[in-house]
Length: 262
Image 1 (cartoon, rainbow, N blue to C red):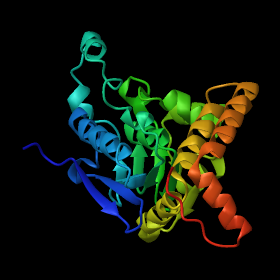
Image 2 (cartoon, rainbow, N blue to C red):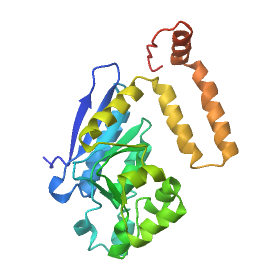
Image 3 (cartoon, rainbow, N blue to C red):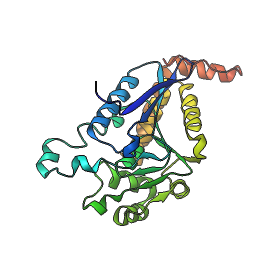
Image 4 (cartoon, helix red, strand yellow):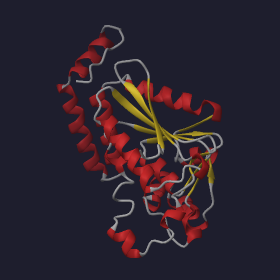
């Protein structure tokens, strides 16, 4: 049996619960390799297909969310090894296929591939000891899992260029100011806060949650007119759902809605 490079747990007791994934290579500061990313991808896809799961949280250890890719594993690669093996594309970006919300709960180092994995998630909740960075330039390479693309969209060109070219790290306070993370919480409360956010998402109507995620992502991948048109289509479509009827009836009658995710 292969080593468990991730730990999984289902949290909550409601109709929809949270899937918690903990990266589990503590001695390597959760350095990412193909085997770990295969296991992570399999867990993500399984929970995305599970109607009982409403949200997913990915976290690491207090010391490191993930301190980067496993350099030893790729140090000997040639161009053809990386190209023919479809390195990264083949199995590192499965989180982008997930329709349900994915939250990154980041403590300690999120560097290189670790920062890129966090940015692939829908939003990041950071512990106050978190540090983000793209230090690949010091290895004679560049970020390869979206760092040069997602980081500027999050923090702007100037800060992204600074981080990518100098390899400097951004602490949690700066990351929140720059828009890389949604909130910063005390390290001891990181998982509690992330799971509370996930539980709140789980309590919402499943279709509206997924469509809201699609629409926000569309904003980063299209022009304003196209994005607004897409949003309008999703908005109209939700009037065909049972949850829209329930949500509005509950509001009118001053009661708590009971969503059926239909």
